[in-house]
Image (cartoon, rainbow, N blue to C red):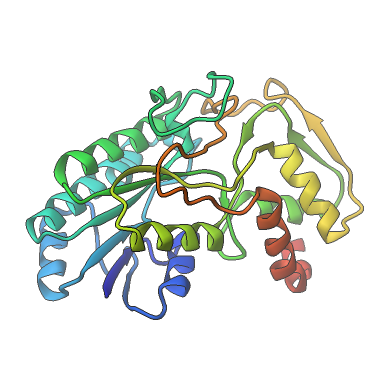
Length: 282
């Protein structure tokens, strides 16, 4: 199988390349393919015939999106629409990755695929609109919503907290709940969905849920960091973009592909990153 992975330099893009390494993978970063230009996408697919497209490219700067909505729109809406249009023209199925931020977090229960979205931020709205564009323009689409993705590559919350924790105590929000998702586990789950020929919308995130504070505490304990993790409220740590209060994801669909519990992802991450702790001090 020939697979085009967009956003190939990101956390999930790199994890997907490893999980699908037994296939013919064409990894495209922004320099190789500008998905915001439809003619570029059409030309690229004309030169490189593929059997699947995995779109992991995205604008994920949640707070910056509040003042840079054009960049969020370009990456999260225009790009997915172009991929959907061009891939449909060639009968290529398209996997698109979306976010828990399409929800407001007020349901009081884990979110499933049939729950009604209500994004609170510019970023969340751009991700929801991207989903809709993919669903409208590619009849073979698979949209995967995930949450709180992290890995040893790139910038992410876990690596930031380690860097801070190596220098002293940290204050972390304790009243926002979600589903921490280890990128390699997510990539493995995506493979199962692809091989099962699943189509439509699917939730795929670390099983269970916790707060940012709970995630940090678990990580510090596994890494044996002595710094204290002090819980704070969202009100004490204001940010430009509104976050969902509780957006734990679970699936109500068959096949029932479930990722390992979030703690298992943190444990795998801690084992992998432990040799590089000194580098994270800077």
